[in-house]
Length: 406
Image (cartoon, rainbow, N blue to C red; front, side, top):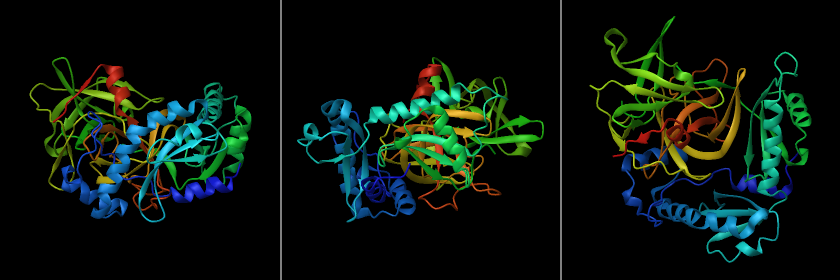
């Protein structure tokens, strides 16, 4: 289950993926670098190690990926093996399309690098589906425990299904794959630092509290939403229970903010809170630098795009999307459909907002790999840091909500 030489080269070249999800998704045209909020530019430079001079080039690459990605998938058909944005050795950015065939049908697409790999996306999806099926068919008290198996995902960059494990849990991973019947040649193992932990501890990213036996449980607001005339906000499902009152303000002077109206977790990690009529909703996200960022829509960003998250514990942090449709084990629970990132986060950030450079809302913070004894994963190296969020659009669809934009 080791990487091929070409896959290893691809992994090295893609250690730093693309940086900004910054194209006009309505018109399809790229927008100027100076149209990005300067505070967001500074946050991206701080967390991603980029320069202002690189901005126009990766914006151009991002726009190209949105135009050519679907075309490449149609052209390659069953040989399509995924696409991503990656940083090259010279610091520039490029859009890569992988194929399990010759790739001839896609080589005429302008600005696209076509790379040949072993497995098609369909083959990787079949291996992923086998792992999912094995988990769904497990019987409590009868099936062998998954032990140190943390998560599994499709990774087009390495052309594999990646199974993430606790240190020393290789045997658990081997058993997991073997029992599933998945193609072992399509699977790669990686070792995590820490274990997935729920980060529980009305502007996006702001704090709210709900009462539990031992006191108050803090989480973060996702995005303001409406359902008809009803006001509310979305957040993580593990942050509350239906009917629980949500509070805002200091513990010494708490004010009722609303009530958990719907909660779905585990499996997914979504919830929405009905906000009391006297409160005002804003279609903005807190940047924890005395500023607010406008929410423009909820167009889903691709793998490799940059985005930032806002939360009450670690503030405003940025990074990139590593993978989508990731399945993650948290204790005895399993979460599916998660998006994996390298963004730093901590306990209490749960439910907080994720936003791209052009103001597209992406999701709410769910869980992250946190070192034992730590309250956040900000001390973990970016290359091994993992934080997952629940995508936003499935929340809006499930509950029939409308995102409030600015």
